[in-house]
Image (cartoon, rainbow, N blue to C red; front, side, top):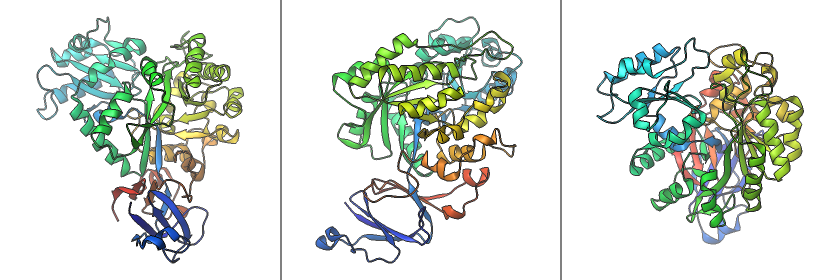
Amino acid sequence: MSHLLLANARVAGVREPVDLLVRDGVVARVAPAGTPADSGTPADAGTGAVPERVDLDGRSVVPGLWDAHTHLTQWALVRRRLDVAAATSAAHAARLVRDALTDPATAPPPGRPLVGFGFRWATWAQPPSAAHLDAVAGDTPVVLLSGDLHTAWASTAGLRFLGIEHPTGLLREDEWIPASPRIVQVPDDVTDALVVEASRAAARRGVVGVTDFEVADNLAVWRRRAALGWDGLRVRAGVWPEHLDAVLAEGLRTGDVLAGNPLLTQGPLKVISDGSLNTRTAYCFEPYAGTHEHGLLNVPTDELVPLMERAAAAGLDCAIHAIGDRANALALDAFEASRAHGSVEHAQLLRRQDVSRFAAAGITASVQPEHAMDDRDVADELWPGRTDRAFPLAELVAAGVTLAFGSDAPVAPLDPWFAIASAVTRSRDGREPWHAEQALTLEQALAASTGGRGVAPQVGAPADLAVLDADLATLGVGSDALRGVEVAATLVAGRWAHRHL
């Protein structure tokens, strides 16, 4: 493999510029700038290899960024779908659909559905219905996906396309999730190309790896992509309960390489234990404001524990989706009872006595700080008096809990700088910070975004690096500054995944 010398770089914790030597995909040396390339590196001296020298001119180098929670195929598709996130009512969303259907550039071909993404209906005055869409779409199938992917809203023709009979057209949780693969009815070669495109876009933001929780047979999907010569990001491929038997039959453990491609590894077992805030299905101790509803528990503890025990015995980590405080408490119960390792995904609302349980059990809180900005208003409305313990990032860090940041793309954009900005500022769009007491420092937020690699490149670590078009030490910590960080280059295993130097 080629050798690379990144000269005159800035790294966290070092006052003066350094040179980083990358050899065979690994950080071989971090030394004061100007140190001879072969100093302390007998392997280079013995082979006569001369590293390519790239002068970074004071740019910061950080460990490459990870997104710990994505649905990568859905994200790749959503980048091409109708955006209905701005809709403020069912009627407004229907107008967006009408405009898309009357525009030849966005109208679907005959027989294919118009698919949109991003509506959030929890606080709308009137719930969405098939009738709203029928009025503008007629016989064209329309299926709109909610911003949290837990709800779909279909026209009557859209329901027929999905093979579902439903009285209102608003499909929630188990009414929708089993039918969701029908929307991903795109040829494999098309989706694979879109995923490559999406991964390149992620690399332009400093991303070196993702955990992929796509609702699919991810073992088969990523083996197919490996056979096509996948050389993009690192991918940890999650497994869903319905595909667990195949993974166990092959003896795969979390971290095992898939299909001989070192960029692809087996990820954790993913289980969705409750719903979401925006569908009012996150499982909570107290009812939602103005209702007697506490949300939904999708997997009872007496079913969850043996499932986790089975996975843990085979060497698989577990990733348990839990959003409401009661779901989180039960997920922690299940980790303690099963002695499984892994993460709680989302951990949006927590009882204070449960925060320390994460650290005691060694459970990672896999969180999506951008969701706090998306959900702040609906949380204030539906969880009144509780939002001081919603997205409690600072409390988790203070308790010694390991955080892993993600986007849940397409729920939020696959851009770690959005997550970092939301965690540090608790603000977006010029608004006042939301529960600023839960804000993190930039160093804490960055550490939660590097897949456990800290904030500075380390000798012996994989050469998964992001080069920032700025000196991190002088970077402003306002929301706009952090969201707008420019990434000059990204290295994955010592290979340029993005370069604009």
